[in-house]
Structures are given as structure tokens and as C-alpha cells.
Image 1 (cartoon, rainbow, N blue to C red):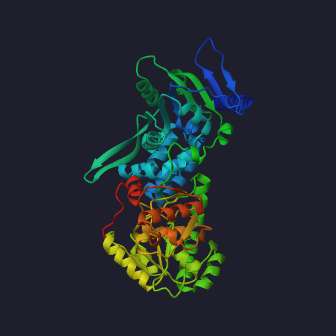
Image 2: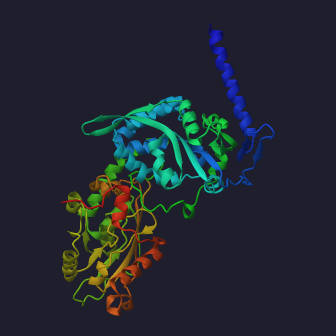
Image 3: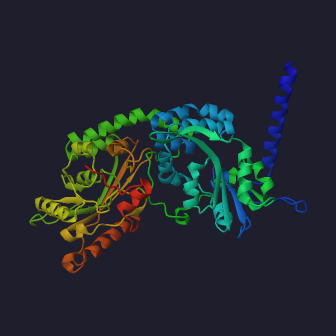
Length: 531
């Protein structure tokens, strides 16, 4: 009985080893198989990149390992769990990873475990926000440049197949990648008085679901796709063979060197949301949860330094506790004999921009804000004044503050994480001629210090909880007289000139997008919060 039980396992192990050895002997590039008896399979070398053009043909592409350079599903489930469900759900999913690893990420059982922990109890609206505002950044950074340029982009009809639930990838594939059809697993929902919620269970699990979906997509009986693109390590790749004329297999080694540059993204990635600033693999999330208690302690210490200590001492103390701060340019605030203060026009990266400006100047500078939380106002070491979004009242408020001294403004009206500058409101240019543009940039490795749909009072805490948050403050000198309203320019012309000057200093691209555009895309509202 023992022999009969062990023999199949030994045979299976031999078959797996033979398969791996045969795969290693193959090419490291994209292997091209034609579904025809008269044509022998051919191999394209990775170094030559001889992937044939798709033309106007129908292309069926495996999203995980085909379009993306990695076949891993766990990081994207973790993003959905953390950003849509919170840290406790993310910790539960991390605890389930050993089971997922044993079952296999792409197997029905492995995907079911991840889907249940990730989606059970979540509302469709929460998952839609994550799929629209968080996941596209991580998908875009892991696109396979060769597959995208030579097979996906020129295709006439584009069909994407994913092993994950369809709600995770559909928005990105249709909005960014112009996919015509997305085939993926479906999630069950239940309705109660307050709305719909996911059960975490998959509808019609198994390979048969994907086969049926592919038949429906291709249309008539016997219809086949012209090209199919799959990754090497996906166990469901054999499902594509009966439905395509040519099969292109992308090896893992080949995909590692095929990153798509930002300049060639299908659409500019300007806005994204979420707290996590890294791809949450299992090892990365384990390190994150181990560091998080220390990060919170560091954040409290760094905030206390900014509130309690004088500016000259806080600069050195913050550096001792890991805050990297670089400042350059002329810090002169103008002629002290002038009756009005100087207006410092800053780019907006986090809520700490005015505080970092104050540290760089070594003196307090007032600032105006739209949506600062009450906790942030209490803890702020500088004076903050709320604006009302009423143009006349806000102009009067800014004028009064300039009469009292120097003032810092962020005319973008909201933060932007990527190397882009949003449209500058011309209001500041209509109220002052003594202006100093200040180029500010912030870098993090663990947690973003901004959010659109989350808890804004956590923004400074999250930013300062990073192991080594960095800030760059560069003073660009006073705006020339001939570029102000005193020199005959309009407020819009002055605002555009300052925006382009700051963009050149930072290497950022200037846009005409506004605060409302950001919030409509990421949160589904206009960004106005009632007091």
C-alpha cells in the first residue's frame, strides 16, 4: 500500500523536473508556436526581439505574465486588501500567504483563498476606488515593453485574460490599455438594506469558466484569435492553445529587461492614491509590519521636534532621527523696509510644505489652506488660515496676511505625487508683486504622506513614519519686475510663468489640470468638504 501511494508522487516529481530541464534548454526569449500541422514551431531569440507585428489581428493576451512582466498575483490582492479594507485585513492576507504558496497563486484554490480574505465584506464602491486610483500605478510600472509595443498596441481587437477577479484589472485595461474585452473571475455579492457587499466567493471557478468566456468573446463556432500571448509559469496557459493560431510564450528572464519607460505610457500617470509606496510582495509586507511600530515611534518623535524645539535646533535634531533635508538658493525675503510681506509661491507635495519652508528660512511664515484637518491645525508649528473658496473673501484674507508679514501659498490647491505640476490659480499673482518661487519635492519609500479618499489627519504621521523621508527646498529668487502685474502682465500670465519656472527647476511637466480633476478621478467627488 505504501508503494502504490509513493510511486505516483515519484513519477510526478520526475515529470516536473524533466519539464523544468526542457524549459531551461529552450530560448530565453519569446517562443512562437503556430497552431498548424504544416508549420514547425519556431523560436525567437530574446536579444533580437523578433516578435512579429500583430497588425489588425485579434490578440488575446494573458495579463499576468503576458502584458505584465511578473506573473505574481499576491501583491495586487494585498494592495486591494490594504487600501480597500485596512491594515488588519492586509495582515490576515499576509498570514494566509503560506497556504496560498502551497496551493499556488494561479490555481483556483489559491485565488479563492486570496479573494475571500481580500473581498469578503467590501462594498463594490470601495473596490472600484482602489482599482481606479491605486492599482493602475503598479500595473503601469510593470508593463512588458516588448509585448505592449509589438503585439498589443497595433492589434485591431484586444482581449485580456486575467487569473484575478475581473474587478481588479478591468478599469485599468479598458481605460489605459484600450482593451475591448476583459475576461476574469467573477465575485459573488449579497444585498442588504445598506447596499451590496462581496461574499469573497468566486462564481463558476475552474478552467471551464475561462474557456467558455473565450468562446463567447471570439464569437462564431470555430473562430480563433490570431495571436495569443502568455507567460511561462502560468499553469493555465494550455487553455489558450485551442483558441489561437499563434502562441507567444514570454519567459520570465526576458520580461525582466522589458520595462516600459514613463515617456511611453499609454496615458500619463498623473494622479494616484493609496498609502503604500512599494510593491507589497510577501517579504516586503512582512518587513513593513515589523517596521511599522518603530515607524510610528519615529513619527511621534519627529513631530515633537518640530513643535517643541527652536528652528535652528530642530534642523539638526530631525537629521539625527533620519529626516533628509536639502535646501538651496537665495533665502532672502526681500527688503525689510517694504510695508508688505513677501509671497512665497510653493509647489505642493505634502501638507508639510509650509513647515519645511519655515525650517529652511529659520523663521515662522504664515500659510493659507483649504482642507487642513483640525488635528493638523492644532499640531502645526506655524500659523494656518483657512480659505473659503469664495474669490473675493479669499483675496481679502491673503491681502490682510501680507500686510502682517510673509506668507506661503500653494497655488495648485492640492498635492500631486508624480513629476507634474497642476494649474496655478492666478489669485496670488493678482495680490502681490514681491514673489519668490520655491521648488519643493518630497520622496518616500514606505508610506505616502498624502491621500484623497482616506483619513487626511494621518498624512503628516504617515510621511514622518518612513525610515528616511526626504525633502528638497530650492529658492528660485524673486520674480522679475517685468513678469509681474506691475510690469503689465495679467494674473494668468504671471501664474503660468511661475509654474513653468518651477517646472524647469524640478524637471516636472506643467499641466492644466485642477484640483477638481484629481478628486473626480480618484474619489468621485469635487474635493470640497463641508465644515
